[in-house]
Length: 273
Image (cartoon, rainbow, N blue to C red):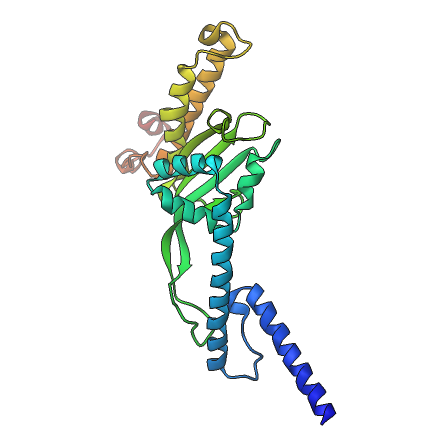
């Protein structure tokens, strides 16, 4: 009896460990060993997802309590630029697993940029159950999320915040120390988005710039003029590249049969030339 009790206790401890690791991992990892039935695996995965949802809710509320005037400034800019309500933006931010990047951006000598993508991503349907093969139903939905910009494909709109100094970002200086902009790349058309951003936003802003730091002559300075000329030329190159990709430049086909069909001697070739 004592031996059986030990064995049962060991089984119980092992199963508790398996379940514990499943709860802290992905919903799809919450699957019993292969010897158990597929149906039971689906039930356990559903329970695990509920536990994960409960933990996520606690995390969201903790993050919501951290939101101050600095966060509200970012939220207001994003909502205005992307076309969402401030409540929708706040919900997306506190649900994001990269939420800590915001604090790293605010810190002294912190991140120089903070990026948000708003685009179609594959998301699991609400209350979706696992299929027999372990997959889930998913569909494309618009989502706002924080990114470093180096791992996800960019196919929608990007809201970006840039620091102008290494100062700590506070509620009183966030509007002076942080610049915001929108880079629209709908349908993945990056060249068109960059061309529009430079030609319609950046170049007009640069040409109306009065203060050029140590350059006292401003726009009359030859180096400033060369710089603006280079930017204009770059935008022109972007436009040409985009038009080439979109097949806007087409070479006309020429029928040369009438010129080459009766060539018999060198003088005919000269005439045809």
